[in-house]
Image (cartoon, rainbow, N blue to C red):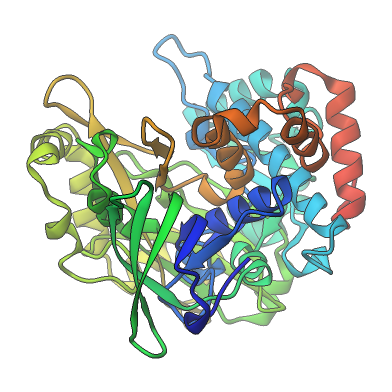
Length: 489
């Protein structure tokens, strides 16, 4: 499925730009659907999965909306909207089914190398927050996707679930938590690296005079430039997607812009604390903060070692990628997106204020925030580590107005020959569902064929169904994938 620089094929059916989890997922899906397709993946970094997909760069939670409170907003009437959480959870179940297929087909030999069981918890304090969490629980556990969720205000019970966050904590009148034992920790960087290998940079994309697209590439080893003609292009290059989408010059990309947000982790170096904690504990985000900045005390397995992180803390950088350029933001400005970006900025003043405050934080300031979740945290046990770079989508809303989109969005050309992925969370966790959603737009004829329909059901048995409305099918799916992925039922 991949080619080294000297093996670039001058004409190919499919070109995937960016060797992250999105390209890896789409590449496997297409190759399984049609083994005769020629597919090439281009990536300028030394290894796949080292930007947004990497475990240190924010990806890795296994977003299933069990604990992420920003997916369940409270409406003006006080009720809780769980529609986004339901959608994300269903999409995550699709990912589990697809990963189980990868294991069955030996694309991945040991599932524990990229996925493991880690409970997902929400943890809040204060009367209003406790009331919110109870309403959220009442709304969510009525849906079959979230049956098994536990809610408690019993501090002894919370201590059993997550002893680290309760150690030396003062007794509080209003404290609550929810817990989902079937939560997971997923190392998307490791999964990506097991699926693909490459080291080619894409410089430009232009319409080819004979149809399709001409992709200009450069070997990062030999620096040799080679053009490749392709029928279909998928751009999954993280923050660099905006630049490449501009090069493609499809009308659907007009009006899109991006706002970069960087991140920092507090990484624990105290092995006793690391071993004491085994959960992903999410709290409530500060007012005006982007979703990627929802604070959490996060257990992750990275490079075979258990790690404990807190954050991420937001920051600002002109870069669209961690390995990008300070000119990225300036280069993304165009006549068609200038006014929407200015409009989005004016409509998101609290976000700007929040980012300024975050940039000004000292190490002790960050430690004070951490102590709200881990009271025993000492400054000598935690170090600051740079996390990933995210580009929040800005798109036209009404006329020249623009709005900031918190999520992942696919942009597809009218003829289906180009597809690009923009945005951030939940991203990697729902990669399979996102890639399946673009197939009918990019391969309309093939997607209607019995051969493709049958193969898609083999790869993802719940494809085309709603697990949120079928408890029996949901339980069957979870039991089967848990067995294959070596997780608990």
